[in-house]
Length: 338
Image: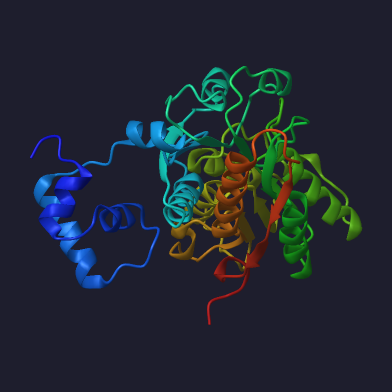
């Protein structure tokens, strides 16, 4: 039935309009049998909640946007799934945006121009200029994700990347490895994530009294499997190749694992390896990958909660910097299989 209303669903299910509203929004406990009747009526009538009407009635649409640099990245795909789950518990729908790291696109979304009905934005910026972001015209509630620090009035959710990278490097050093390479640092202008992970890596070397060899940090322009493989091939071509490598994400590590295999280098016997992100494929690689696991669920919960508070409180409320946890998950790439 085209153009079905809440009232039509209530009549079909034999319940009140309030009960249908509760089922649609998931805001109140409804008996399972009643919920099934309502959902069946919704399906029969092809009822679609009207976001525009809700926006006019309450001032909110129940829609928030999540913008990430690349949704094809397993890390961002997994983070998006956690954000969707966190938003669903708060009766919100998530609009996913892939910015491609384009600063103009990042600004468009930060201004709320991707959809006129969105209540707020979760943004993981890659190249957006701080002054441009701070001067954005439409003050849509905004929460920033990721490591890049902006001195603007916005809530920010992140993990301590430098501490995580140091722990990963410390783990490799604790195995007795001393030729510890790092894959993920570009030769040119680096973004905040690479800067902080490089800082953690160098701090660990310094604390252990291990000299830094610049040859062990090959130029890596992308966080991809191909880039990881190319960097690993370059490292293995050195006269004194590394005996361990810290990769700045799991995709780089995946490519590095393949390159090591192709050259007959055994992991972890000849080369210990640690990644970063703990994406699902890393649990099933051969060998399975030791990696830093950011608390993606914690990041999502903190970010959605912060955005809901910002939507409720408005722009004048104090802004917060929220830090989620991480852990080093030790697997076969730094210890022989039993």
